[in-house]
Every structure is written in C-alpha cells, then in structure tokens.
Length: 105
Image 1 (tube, rainbow, N blue to C red):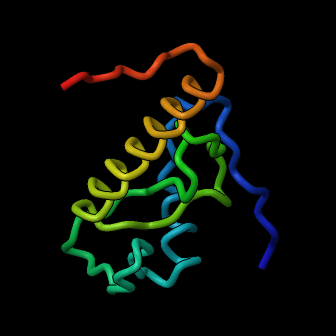
Image 2: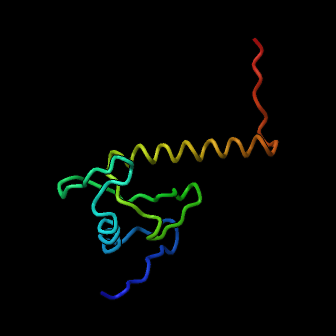
Image 3: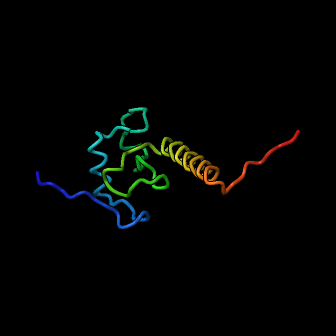
C-alpha cells in the first residue's frame, strides 16, 4: 500500500474532502470518538470533528480529525465554545481590560 500525504486545509474554512472522511473513519475503525466508543453504523449520521477545536487553536488537518455521531458532535461543539468563552473572559480579566462588576447588596 502506498503512503498518502496528510491532508492539510488551505485555511480554516476549507471543507474536508470525502476521501479524507473515509480515511479518518477507517483509521478509527468506525467508532465514535466522543467517549462513548460506540460503533457508527452505515444508517447513522456522523460528522468529522476537530479534536482540538479551531476556535481553541486547533489546525484544519487530517491528524486533528475524528469521527463523531451527529448528536455527540453538537454537545462537544457546545463544550468547545464554552471553553473558548471562559479562556477569553479570563484573559480579559488578567490583562485588566474587562473589570469585574461589583454588586452591592
């Protein structure tokens, strides 16, 4: 079998080609990588997920991709967004850009 070069997206908006989706699915044995370790059946919908989210500094490349069931992908994406928001708030506070709101009561 010949070696295939790793796919790297030109930018963060570059969609993952179907040939790369197939390679990622096969690399993980068709198992959902959200933590449930459930087999993804052909009739079920699944997405390609970035292990480290793009909004948290991940790269759009084949090594950062994993197969995840659609419902599990939604919850993981929400967790990624919450993590980004928390990091952003903490950075603002540490830099003194955003002051705390004090409540007197």
